[in-house]
Length: 121
Image (tube, rainbow, N blue to C red; front, side, top):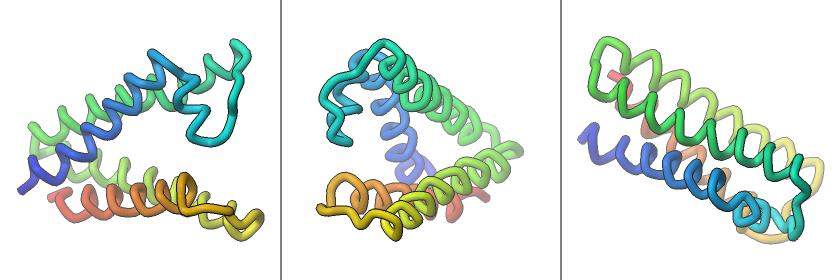
């Protein structure tokens, strides 16, 4: 059960990270940004790319070492919850016009946080 549930979360972070490192413009397009300067590409590679790959690695590592699993899974679950909460605040300030990407990623972040929290033991 642990492997199946966390495997999806790990895969999401890994794929997001690799895509952001290789093609940051693809990540920007999700949010309606059509052109990036070098500073923007660097930021996406760092925040989405490097962070995503490292989180996938840390989650994989913690999944295989039971003593670290609760703390690591809780920390990542709380981070995902913070991202989802930020989307709620953003929706109050500027209501999203469509389900995708804002509400889609809100739901995804909330679901991934719930999975990690539920399987942390």
